[in-house]
Image 1 (spheres, rainbow, N blue to C red):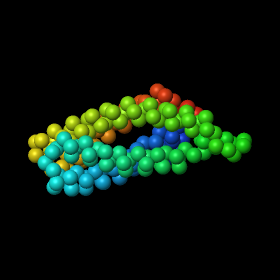
Image 2: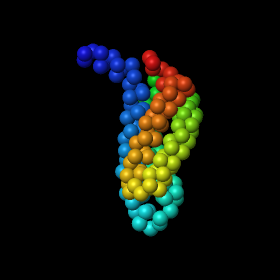
Image 3: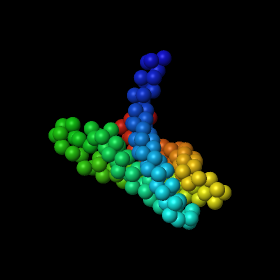
Image 4: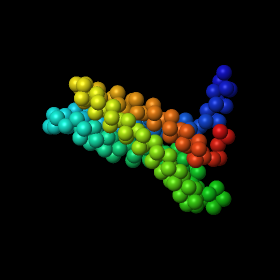
Length: 161
């Protein structure tokens, strides 16, 4: 059993770390978003603007945290082993691939998050409840799409998967 787990981890290590980074960054963004949406609701009754501004605040937290963790987990891929210098071709390639898969995934995430959050607030859910339910539901959709996209663009092309 232990050998199976180790083989599984080694085979899917890059995807496991990728998803770990998404989940950690998303959790941090969710916590900040929960507090923000409640504070905003005290000052405005506009549920649509609350949904949009909460999403913007969540992105301001999510993107830098994800980028930092992704870099730390993958920095060895960006160093040429023979010269010990940065391999800018790999960095550029990964940035383009990440931009492509995140663009599609984030559009779908944003649309579903705003729609769910707004609709829940319209039917008298507390703002924090709308944020939690909207975020968790949208994350499930997002994770499926972004992992599929990572496979399609071969983000981890040197992996065995």
